[in-house]
Each structure stands twice: as structure tokens, then as C-alpha cells.
Image 1 (cartoon, rainbow, N blue to C red):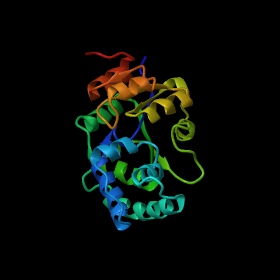
Image 2 (image 1 turned 60 degrees about the horizontal axis):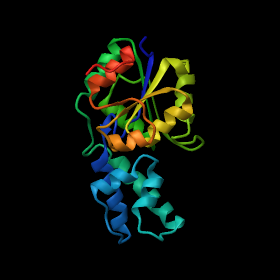
Image 3 (image 1 turned 30 degrees about the vertical axis):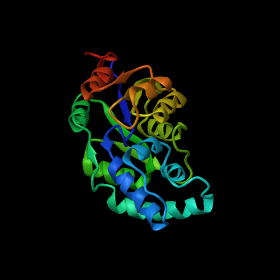
Length: 221
């Protein structure tokens, strides 16, 4: 039996946002004379929200007050440049279109700031998603289940009707905490080994495998 609702992570799952995140991170680091970070370093830092990204990007010993300043400087820069180099992963738009045509409801839950989430979803996936939700005041970010629970309530769906699709250990934990099924993808910010260590039971490498699992709860090679 196919799922009725597919909830996707955004960064590393639907969109390759790594270059824009790196550029905005390095912009605020450079403003303060700190060393910039490589793409691979930022890849390891993402997944737990922007503040956590900055906490890991600054040199060791930098205090919380400075992190607060960089965070405040990061947000408007990223808001203005979040779509400069960002692109959907190959096959993602066709996947969403196909799922919607088959009656699957679609949503996004992300630890990215809520306005940026909605801007990117509107730009790249117009008329495909029913709900998109990001980090904002008053709701805990992933791996807390709050945003997933919010989507389930808003769309009036039961947990056994929904599946979560993501690319990181945070996403695996989010699905577990929300008590819904999970598919992990290995084309994003974490590799298969990391996902297995996080407890992922279903790991796929193509958008076709994602679709197969959502429709039939099995993977067709």
C-alpha cells in the first residue's frame, strides 16, 4: 500500500544548497577576519540549523556573543543569495511531479530559516508542495518532531500514512522521533556509511528508488 504523504527534507535531499551556504558562511567569517571554510567542511557542519553551522565554522574558542553577531549578519546575506548557485538534484522535479500525479501529498520540513525555505520551495517547486516549514521562533528544530507533527496535523494525516525522506543523521532521528517511516538518500550531504550508523533502514541512491518505495514500500533495482 502506498503512502499518502511524503515529507521531504530540503537541503541535501531536494536541493543542492551547499555552495550558497558556504558562500554566506565565508562572507560572515571574512567580515570578522576568521579563516574561511571549504565546501567539504561546510557539508559536515550543515543539518542542525544555521546557528549550529556558524558555531562549528568559527575558530575554536569564539564565544556565543560573537556567534550571535555572525548569525544576525548571515541571515540577510543568505536571504539575498540563497538561490545564486542552488539547484535541484537531478530527477527531483520529475519525482515530485510524478508523486503528485499519483495522488501523493507533498510537504517539506527543514532546519533552514522558514522564510528561506518558503522562498526556495516557491522558486523551484511551484504548485507541487502543500506545506513547507522551516526553523522559526517557538518551534523546536529537527530532530525534534515538532515540524513533522505540525504538517501531519495541518494536513490531517495519520503517522502510518506518511513517510519522511532525508539525507542526514538528523533526518533519520527526526523520522524516528516523529514515529513515521523513513527513506534516506545518499546523494546529499552525508554518505551511506553515516546514514547506516545513524540507524537508517532504507537507503536509496536514485529518485526512481524513492518513488518505488513510496508507491510500493519496496525498492526496485
